[in-house]
Length: 69
Image 1 (cartoon, rainbow, N blue to C red):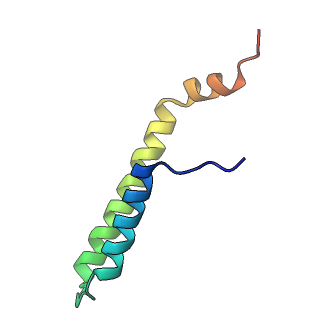
Image 2: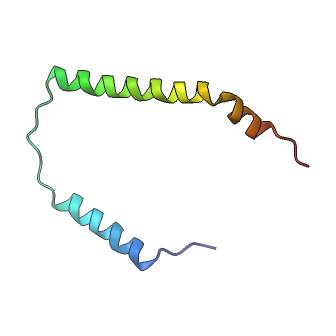
Image 3: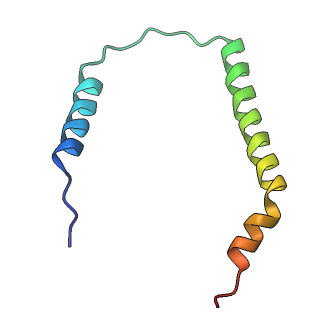
């Protein structure tokens, strides 16, 4: 069976499409410091995720390795 989208979902979808259709082209310049900032954000996010996995690894492993009763 195919799921039907609600009216609210259709309104959101159409609004996003219209906004993307009407947006003007941006004349933007990305300098090297912007690229460096983006790189730092990506590396920082990766480090935060890896630290979170390290801290909670035992809980995560136990959650997925529990035997059903």
